[in-house]
Image 1: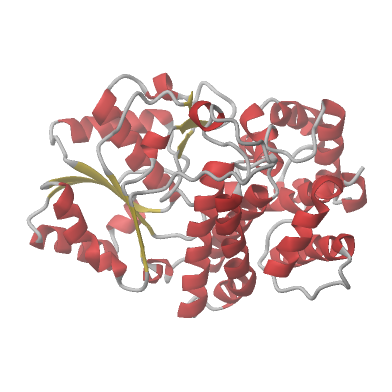
Image 2 (image 1 turned 90 degrees about the horizontal axis):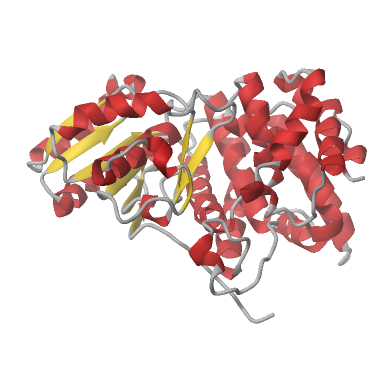
Length: 408
């Protein structure tokens, strides 16, 4: 196979301590009226007050929406848009965690193209460019600052739904690790584990070839040379610093590594896509109402074990990125050690070990498997194929905590 690569990214990515101070100059390049999406907690912080004061000093008029809710309930977007329409912004600035950034994307979409959010569910439904979005994350893990996806909770659907389009990619991703300094250990763990899961699933995704039509018809297109580069960078950074950032939130170097790891993981999975760990989390999250990152991380070691026969060499390469010693050129031994190290790291930072611990009811195992198998945009990325029997075995293994059964 000839070398193939694809990546869809913001026009500008700025990363580093103090980079939030560049926001006024960046915003001024996009116009004089900014609609700001954030949440109630951040609205009360000195950090947000400082950011807004900087925009005001740059003579950027603002309308601030500070009622963003977790998982972006569909109807809350309508309330957000109602506040923004009369303001007629030139840009939308998202400041906060993944939900705030997703709200900003949704706001830019509806302000630009109108209609209902439901009109855009799925892939490539956004008809053209939107108002420019400037994404300023305050957590390290979702990768929303660089991805082409906004995730919505729709009360008419059991599972969360995505809007996927290259037109949703932020114009600017402005990442300042200082903004993550106040994240509590539990959020640091869940967001960082989410990022590591993004990177590992992107790196082990199916390689789907160089079909010229593939990137024009699908947002997630499998691994490639460029997505592998970003995924390995993310894994190196998260492997060396996620546990340190969880143990000591004041460790600036660890915080920077974790935020860069989340960013790089977003650059990887935003094109490569994610796979079975995310597919299972969608129904599990709907039933247990637990954080997304916690669910995907709970599933990841079992999914890696399931995929081992198909991608032992890739999993071994992940182990090298995590800093594990080579196993005398024995890829299978190193791959096995890699899965154990991922499980150890997640256990160390408080990630649940099983779906039972996460709160999934045993009588929902078959339903969970059926729903997960139906999420084709994720399942098609699996390097080892699934049928319903295999998916049931995987979900049961993750429920029971039986790693050996996950490999069957």
